[in-house]
Length: 190
Image (cartoon, rainbow, N blue to C red; front, side):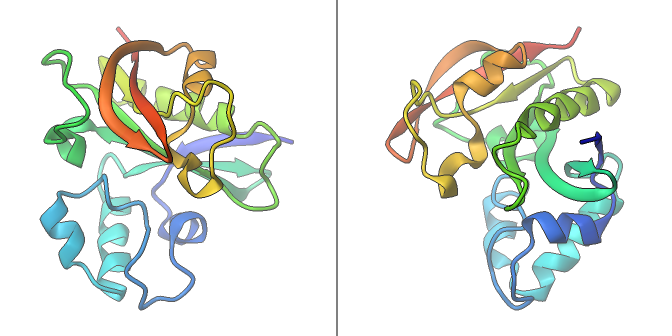
């Protein structure tokens, strides 16, 4: 297995990883945290795909993609927190005024799971943030204490995954997902 993690500038690969099965669907594309709530709820069907196409053309693009020998197998949404819904989220605290980046979603395609791909994917998200001048990067995973997390809610990651990548717990949050509390994990990049 040869994993490369690259900026998510290829719309087709992003669509393969986080796009809906039906083009008229009003779900996913990993937009719920990337966009402000008003814009997110107003986008419908093909408009969602077009908005993601625009985001992929921006600098920086909306995240990173893990490739296994050229095949897109994983996605991580990572961007400056100021440009995400975390900028105004009341349940996830701001611990200082640094212009930190947030990693909010990690997804590995079916057929490629349980191979440890989330680790190089998160490392790639960290490197992407670093290369784009982030002073620090945050994640908001569940603190599941080793218990199984429902697959549909595992996209935020687990505290243990972030700790393995060098992140440290910086704060508790009032956010709960799938019955587990979420914690603010941070890695200083300076």
